[in-house]
Length: 353
Ligand SMILES: [Zn+2]
Ligand SMILES: [Zn+2]
Image (cartoon, rainbow, N blue to C red):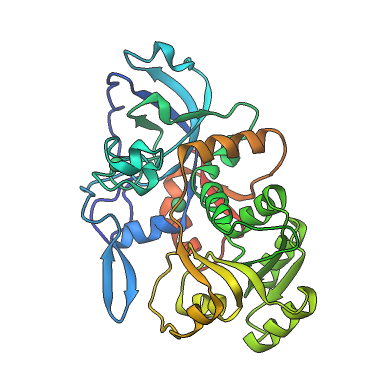
């Protein structure tokens, strides 16, 4: 399913299987997660507010392109020079899609997701997983995922990884209260991960009661419907359960002016607001607030290969159980993207070629 032109629906095409190259692996796709970023990719831009736009891929994308960056499947073929990769044909893998230039400071320190050079992100600049096969340029980007359902391991590559990485940025201590805004694909995964890898209690906000019910089932300590609870009331409820403090850290998985403003309002002293969601828009920042509180506003974009490996291991040991709510045929990609855009997907939807 290919993007031929910005803003146009993806088109179903029949193409040759990409030829294998040295060090590469051809993966037969079993599941490809449908992420909100794919909507931005198809539209061609992020909304920065005040009418300003940012190209989704900084001009690095050459169309036509196959989207899809949450990819799991089986190794179909291995290229020359992969003998020491520890992989063999048939192995079940999840693909790390955030592939950088390999030579910049960020890449050399293992943070390819923040590559300063020519990014090669699969599904953004290179062909991704909305296909039967994907060519991964180096076997080092494959993480063995035996024992995990393909649909579940696929969504670790963006939803899970983004959740883990943003939670780590909160540096939570025992007794802290973590406040998550948005219980969609990333947020619902974050609840389980936060309960597993931090000592904090977890509060979750959403505007949809069915997503909040899911949040409770996944282990949220407190849930709030922000469509029916105003910010002042919410702050007072948090103070009641958090020894007079509001939130010690907030992660905004939505990223619209209303959610980011809510996050700021709920920050306490030395609180951290981590912005993750890319839905878009701009906001006014009350300038004295951050210095007076000694608070921090941070951004997070996906995570590292090492973190994906850690997450796959955590999932295999039963630590988390990623929520895949719906699966579709590859040809239904456009319908799934539309459904996601309307906010009608609970958890994560995957395409299964
Ligand atoms: Zn994504
Ligand atoms: Zn780089």
